[in-house]
Length: 243
Image (cartoon, rainbow, N blue to C red):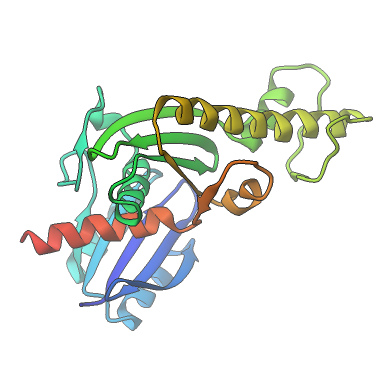
């Protein structure tokens, strides 16, 4: 099958997956649009699947559409499942893409997809192929920043140490313990609630911290940092095959 590229545009970076046939060949991260376009040309890209949850420059989008075939994923795109979400136009396309990948990996299972990034998102697709929604909560850095912003004396911590003891013995270690262990407890507890509600559910992790958190949780979890890119490609293949 032709060469395809998935582009996940976040708030500051563009994460790009290069696909040939059904295999993800490599992943690159770009800040510069000129370097991105040159990489696409060098790869002889034929189709692009684009998911934008950040600030996509209009000039870049025009350049991409002028030089390549582009599927810009949004709420009106054809998806391989039914979406029962009250406000589909506000639903992040990265969340939908991750669910699309989970559905392809586990097509007959109810899946809970947890994306650990700036925010932590929980997304559920049933074994009957229905996306129901999920939840959103603050990620590690948002929790640390909130403690600094909304108090008079707590410092701003930017470097996360995941190896802090449960019992902190300084302001720094107490904040780290609260942020890290609090989020771990939230995720573990949320997984358990979903497991009680949905029999045979499969949990998948994605996002930059997926592997870090997977190793610290007791639950059996499938972790793939590139789940969103793979989901964008899954949606792109569906679109290409139906046109």
